[in-house]
Image (cartoon, rainbow, N blue to C red; front, side, top):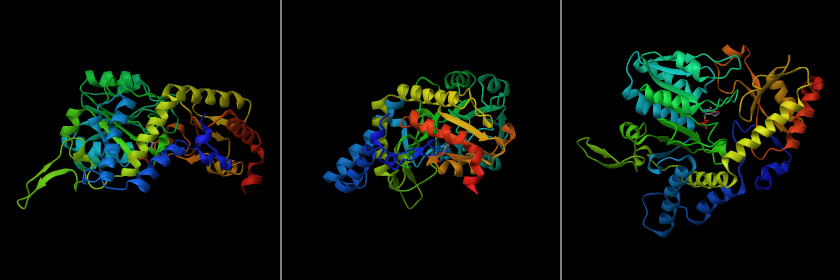
Amino acid sequence: MNREDFPMLESGVIYFDNGATTLKPKSVVAAMNKYYLEHTSNIHRGDYDAAIKTNELYDNVRNIVGEFINCDPTTCIFTSGTTMSLNMVVFGYMKKHLKKGDEVLLNKAEHASNVLPWIKLSEEIGIVVKYVPLDDDYELTFDNIVKSVTEKTKVISLAHISNVVGDVRDIKSIGEFCHKNNILFNVDGAQSIPHIKMDFKNSNIDFLSFSGHKMCGPTGVGVLVGKRELLEEMEPIIFGGGMNSYFEEDNSYELKTVPTKFEAGTTAIAEVIGLGATIKYLMGIGMDKIHEYEILLKNYFLDAVKDIPNLIIYNKNSDSGIIALNIDGVFAQDTSVYLNHYKIAVRAGNHCAKMLKDEIKIKNTVRVSMYFYNNYEDIDKLVEALKNSKDIFKVVL
Ligand code: PMP
């Protein structure tokens, strides 16, 4: 779909590394260029035409986010990406509200950005980080979450879609369960917001984070959305210009209200404008259409490779466009170097989910992650290359 919008595809690259970052359509780059070339100015400071225009565009992106994921636009905070958003939740809110012995439930398929901040917080204030066991398909189930909850569980923090095995977690049921049991629900939407429809208001999610660059938007920008009452209680972790009402010699100061108090300094203005453009672009296609199409591509791939004897696929049943595989006996990185000879871009490694090796019993996988601009010919070329892989060491060595 929409391949003509992505100039990078003209090089012939077969881009299957969408879990890492996505290609950018012309309209997103044009929106940022327009700001840079026609009305460069800082936000929330100037009274001249260019600044007024930039303010309007920047602040309107909160409304666009609000429409996209059904949230209150005034609770949409612009950050530098999912990693920053998650750190803001952990060190801005949780540090103040959790105490020694409180339990936080994660799982071993989580990305480093949703594990390390918690480990650091446990070092600082003595919270206990626990891991919900995954099922035989390496997926996180609602039942296993419920079984892992104790009286001390105060937070469940998880990715809506895992970046390694691509399972779509049952956000609705987990949110409802958390709500009933007074547990905070923190969702990492880095891999889900670009691919499936989100309804923040009706999901009982307390905090939701995502990144622009994984949804055809620019790098350096992301979003944190939270329930208003929680954001009002949350402390900024960065202080500076733009977010304060005053500060005095006697150390008194007052911060602005949500969301401005979380956006200290000059933010990524062009990127926020680019984020607005990419969200409009995705809404123009339709999130349901994107998800359905990715599943068609995935099933087409699974069907085409079912007779390749030495191909191991770890997540046949997951409901997203992420496929984790290995060629038996071949180091994952050798496979990705081999595929690069066919101009096929995939990702090899542990995908920042370093503890998943405890469950899969292998350290690295090759990740094929699809997006709406991939097509059936892309898959055919990948399948062909995998079929020829008996020659892999002739190519790689
Ligand atoms: N969580 C998940 C599930 C991810 O896949 C990623 C990116 N690979 C992140 C968090 C971090 O996102 P970013 O690097 O954009 O901050």
